[in-house]
Image (cartoon, rainbow, N blue to C red):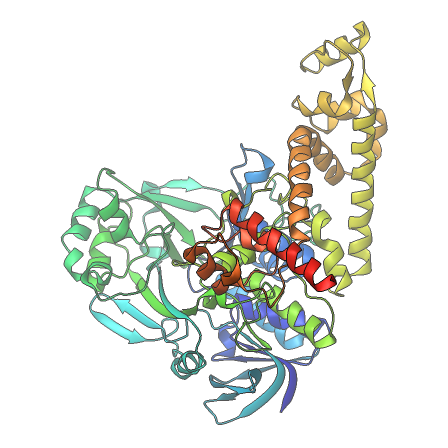
Length: 624
């Protein structure tokens, strides 16, 4: 059977890859081990968070599905870092993990151009250095022009619970052993990573009266820009907060010798920023307690996830440590926590399109690229799906720059720097985070989604109108000023705003104050025509105007470097003045531009200048 695109794996990356491909008109096949587990939340029942929320908003602005699904199945919505600046705020939602999975499966099954089959891929068909298809465990052969691997933690996955080891990609599900072997036989640089999950507890056995309550926002904001904010009124179930104590830590410490993390049983490197509870107790011995979030997994709140208590300790130890916490004395574990080791491809093996360098037409996305998190996976899956179709059409690839999107930062970090531990997105990774805010993702990126046919005319027109209104308002504020007349100073005083001493542009008057719609319209009545969404953008742009100007200037400087391409046949070893270490890194990563080279750890500005000179010399020589 022949297809345009085959996607291997039905997790968050596979969903977005399949939907993007099919919606762009390509005949697409999704192969997954269990159809009912499409969109399953292997770990925490939540979407978004700091920086992760940015990825979901950007994905939504491009035409992805994760934001819409979250709005439809969310059971608590919160803005993290709300008291801080807009650039570092993060949207987060608890989801009903059962309804999320069912929503995604139904969307996939109803999508034109998309076939779904419950089969495990065992090997890739590669001919003359090009991926041509796959063979499944049912001895079925499927051919396609493009193959996308989104196998998550299933490649040679091994679960650890104390001394017990199970071959699995997720608890109760088969590991993909043969596909991992096929990968290695093709000569890819394959590594081993580790991640983990927490125990799930029967909600009827928890005493919530001994815990702190953490509710959702009073006026929740949806994830998707396509969800109507005026009618958005989700159920807001509370999460609860519990704490470990000295007894908990004693239980854990006395069983370190049984912990796979310390016994040498686990070889893979785990996520530094999401350590297991045993790792936290070991590393932070000065702390007398650790915060644990007790999160509902479904609308019925029958089962709760113990966020912050990821573990691979034996089952009896898990029960003892949970019982040691206030409110959890009689808790019954429904599902035990575990660690899982799995194979991943070193992402330096990939191009910015997520196509592998060794094998043409083969793409990788998600945790197989060394990332952790549903959001990072979904963003990569979408980009791989779009690029596979664009390549089919013979069109230019879709690569987001670091100044355009967090998705651009994510992929650029992976393919130029690689990773030795599960990669997680943070706002600190984005140099231009004042520009790359959650609130303006649709204004930044919707033109791409519309171009690919993934957004409706109605939505794109709405966004275009918002952008036009915002540009008009900002231009007015930058071009018009006010003098400190007696009447104007009185108005500022009545609004509780700081007085001005000299002629001042409106962008600075608004930017240095604490304005809302009412105050803004009091000073500038003509702005009353703008929607609340546009007013929000106006206030943010005014507050950060001068900083944003600096970032735009930095981007212009960077663009000079971005325009300089490194020839595909460029030989670094012939360049005098480059250290062996830098040459090895450049040969390994094969950057396509000087900017790409600048992102490789250890490549110095002086090395870039030397390479630049040699490129110019080669160009002159060719002309001569």
